[in-house]
Image 1 (cartoon, rainbow, N blue to C red):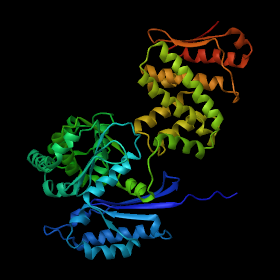
Image 2 (image 1 turned 30 degrees about the vertical axis):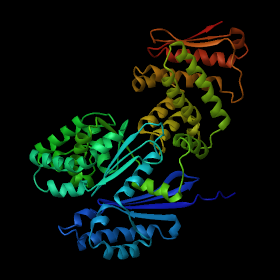
Image 3 (image 1 turned 90 degrees about the vertical axis):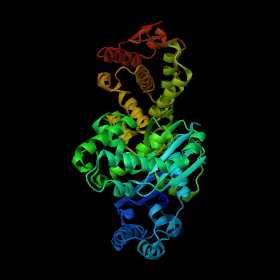
Image 4 (image 1 turned 90 degrees about the horizontal axis):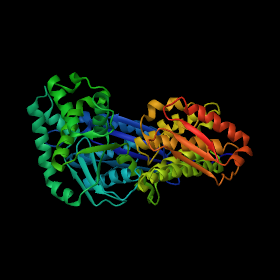
Length: 502
């Protein structure tokens, strides 16, 4: 039986720094990237003082578009959307360039307005982050413009685009040896631009800040490699990066770890713009998402409405993709949630904290067996690897890593989790709950748990006790043996697990 192929769609983002092509399989609105191309065209670098695109920059762009056009052969116009951003907006000879570009690519090109670019960026972000009612500030530093968007659901409350970008600011302020005076001049110039919207943005307000696209990701990656493993961007961290650049004289001589070679020329400009945004808007920290304009173009292309948590869609898609037994996955997840509830209620864990961990347990329980599609032996390791490294729309990097860790810990040697979990009490609760759920559900059939059963941790949080009906345990000798073995596993850690009969 031949399984019908999911329809393919493509988005093309002609940015001021790089051109990107992304091809997706559209599984009823579930985004799955199947191919991606990126080329650093430095389009904005081709603008002269009269805002005319140089022949050299046009040639670079056309060469890239010809490659994209080759990959898109066989696609119909309904399957492809192409958008061009700030450089195409400001170039005075863009009307002469566009026909040549469309001929090379084979598809029409839309030069979108700044606020439309902001809206599409926000659309990409909001479809790949779980909606929780909080307002987010999204900042996207591109090659020639920076977009600022505030919103809490599908429709943004505020969307603005300013003409400051990593390419234009790098060319304007950081052509030669970089000094402290150069950095301050760049930051002041960017702040002056951002002041036009800062009062309005502050009036609307936000609960957390998100960065997207190349500059934000580069700053995050360098900070993580050089100073702190945190996934957040902070102002103090950026000041350290700027000081190191000034001390070395150039970004290249600063020799930052985790900075891609193609980002070296534009890193200082992006850093200055981001520091200006932090200063002018009073941002304390910012997380970074992989979502970007190209994702917003995709969702806009299919006209999809966000009507449920993207993480739930992704979990269901992974269950289908890796041929998970839905009955068994549901059994393990629900049983684990019962154990987790028992542990948390006894310790008066706040309801919101319990709800958060119950979500993690649900995802881990429903996905713990995806690794059996590779091999049954050590399947929990295969499952954990997939969950750590796969594209999982809707999940933050932190959430994805947590689910992976819970799945890794749900069977096998408990001691291996000691360095991973450390003193995170709630994570130990979740791991024990999943281990016991997998143990009790091993027969893969419906099982009535004993009425007399309690799982508790001691008041100091230094161990666990399972009290269980002795007659029920006598009637289930395999589970009794498994619980005895489980107890021996936990003795290898500083958190013992004991079984008491009632």
